Length: 408
Image 1 (cartoon, rainbow, N blue to C red):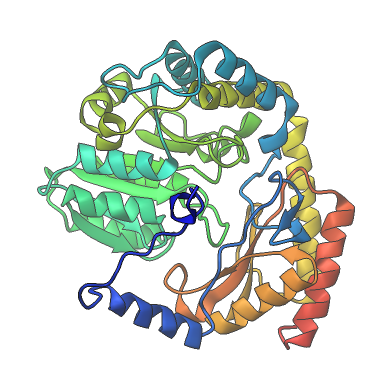
Image 2 (cartoon, one colour):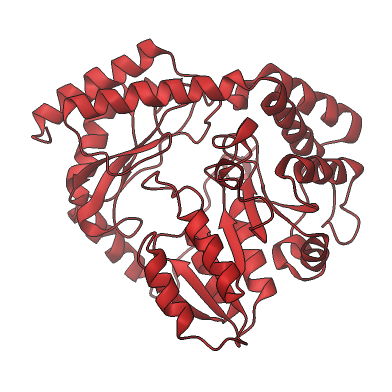
C-alpha cells in the first residue's frame, strides 16, 4: 500500500488563503506568556485514586469520582450485561425511536430516589441545566441567580433570553432586594447551586426556598456536586436541608459520584412532560447507550445498599481538610469533598499544580475566567477510594511544594 493511503497518515489542508483563525494562535500565545496554558493530562488506565497520567503514577485529586464507582464491580457487570443484551447504542433521539425500556426504568428509579413525581434524563448535567432553563422561560421572564452558579446555568439563562439579575454569592438579603423591585405578576426563576463546584461550599438553599415561596418564584437547585455526597444515601442538598416539596426543579448528575455519564431533572410530572416536548438537548441528542443506563441503575443500588461508602468519603474528606489546615493552606470556605488550595495569581496556581504533579500528586490548576483573577487555585477532590496512606502522601507533597514556592 502506498504510504499516502495509510490510515495513520496525517492529511494537511493546503493553505490557499490567509488563515481567518490566526487570532486564536495569538490568544494561545498570550496564555503561554501568562503561564496559564495547559496541555491535557492523558489518563492511561482506569480512573482510580492512584492512576497513570502522562506516563506518571500519581495520587489523583482531580477526579469527580467521589465514591470510586467508575470501577465498582457491580457497575462494570451491569454495563457488560446490558451491552450483550441490548447492543452498544439506542440508535435515535428519545422523542423518535431512542426511548428504551431501560431509560424509563432509570427515570422511575431516580424519581423514587429523589422523592419527586418524575425525572427526565439528559446526556449531561450541562445539557440538563441549559436545556431546562432555556425551555421553561421566555424573554418576558426574569432569572435571579447566584453570582457563582455553574456555567451551564449561565448559558441556559442566556439562551432563554429572560432578564438576568445576579446577587452576590449566597446573599439571600441581596436576592430579596432584587425580588422586591420586580413586578409581582412577572414569572421569576430563583436558582442556585447546591454545592459550588470551585469553592466546595453549600448554597443558601433554605433561605432561597423561603424567598421563592414569599415571592412566588420557581425554585431551582443544581445539585450536581451534591449527588451521591450529601443527604441520606446521597440524595443531595434538598434532602440534607430537608427541603423536599419546596424545590420545583432539581438537577442531578450521573457523571460524578454515580460513576457514569449524564444528568437529570427531577420535579413534577407536568414539568417532565413539558421537557419531553420542549427541552432541545432531549429532542436533538441521541439517548444514552443501554450500558450507561444500566450502569446508573447499578450505581443507585450501591447508594441504597452500601451507604458506608459515603461515610468513607466523608472520613477521608475530614482527614485531608484537617491536614491542609494544619499545614497553613488557604482552603476558603469549603463544606464538601471539593477543597480548593488558593494560591492567588493564576501563574502561581499553575506552578503549584505542575510541581505537585512532578512529585506524584495530580491537583489541577484553576484560573481566570473559571475563578476570579486573584483567587486562582488548585482544586482537590477526595474520594472514598483513597487510602489514608495516599492522602498522607499527598499532604506531604503539598507541604514540600508549598514551602518551596513560598505559599506556606
